[in-house]
Amino acid sequence: MNKLILALILISPFYIQAEFDNKCSVIITLRFQSNEDAYKEAINKINQCEKNDILSVTSFLEESISKVYITDLIQNFCMFDHQIITLIDNKTSNLSCVHRGKQRVERKLN
Image (tube, rainbow, N blue to C red):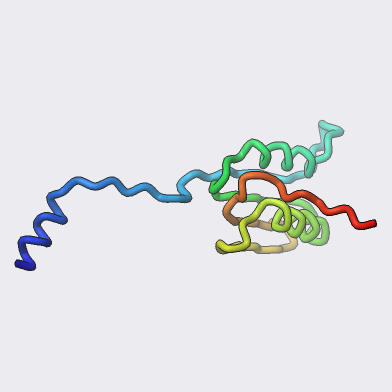
């Protein structure tokens, strides 16, 4: 009986779809030929990503600046109920998380 069930499972076609199978990569770096803000450019790119995409951000800025940018990205774009991975380094900093689909609304305190 166990062999019959195992055979049916192996023979029957099934479709496996990963919930998080798309990656959205963003690079933040200084642009010497452009006056545009690299962070604003990265935000524009992130806004083009879809919900449940794996957001992968690489920053080539100074460590202190990267910390601020990556913290802001986590607060605004990452799902907190999934794993968030960060690596802050002198030369390269990275963030990986699941994109929540849209930017969180910033609350204005009076």
